Length: 502
Image (tube, rainbow, N blue to C red):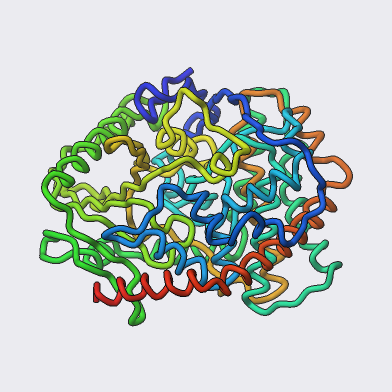
């Protein structure tokens, strides 16, 4: 038994299952799920998402942390959502869970299926990253971006994944028959079932579970798109990436903006001394937690971060990120006192408000954990090979996730989903990734009941029909959203603000 202090005093005991490879299955307790709302009809009303006022009004009500001020955060998010139906669906996970509350009440009521969920599964939330050192290759591929993680029934992750593919097809003008969509649903669920079909559900924390998960990860790595993205990530040069964001040689401060293909992609805003001091103190607290993390069974191989100095701090806005648009984010530029260090020199702090499922009223995270902590721990619980250097901190009353900002994160985008074959392959990939995440996060519980639910007859039909209903509901909502005069006004406001930054 190891003490895995991934976030200092915050994680439970872990168990080393692959000696020499350093991989771990972490024991976690599954907190109670708070389910709000009574069961209603399982068939969707396409107008339901837009009910009770305009769609924009509902987005505003579900995102009380977003307001227009010196930075027009709500307008920036509104502009991102109005881009296309795929961006709208990606950026409205809260509306998705409002829809699920009414149309998936049977899943929500099945307590034996509850466990940690990603909460916002779509192709762009899978990707490459630098893993904790464990004897394997530096780069890994998994689900990424766990800002919406919560406790719920596994079907909701599958449903969101499948619905996202329907929107990707719509934006790329791919028309499929009902039979073809059913086949893609079969591909998603079938890939998810691969792991569960022979999974040793009662070998709690044992080596047979670890071997099953390792085999599932090998199938993920064999996917052509994964191999392509891993190769692309491996070709990146970190120093060139840092130069894109900073001025000076060596880097001395952040630029005001970063562009790509003649478009502004990132906006950086100077902070005053008081705000800078608060961010630096919070960042040092997070890095202190990471310093105490064990990354292998051998004390000599434990991660010991060298000393560092903070060079610059800036507010950071990533343009076009519909999901996290409007949240408070910072970039911190550091220099390591060990000149030979190859550790990243830019870190991001990202605000973690209550997740979409909580704002929609279907779930709550553990009451003994702060939101930033819960999100940070999810990188351990839901990734087979956890991302390196992930932590959490507070700035005032706000929770923040802390992680490296480097060039090694490569995700599929809409241009990778231009054929029916590509959609089918992505369904298979997401199904396998979800199975790994869900199984690993439950590694210290008997998953016999969950396995039965996964293999039940009718699951494919449920995912297929409900994703079609959800697609119809959100297509109607997007049309109403785009037709709202206030959305046009807020989009122009965001565009004007961005133009002033150039």
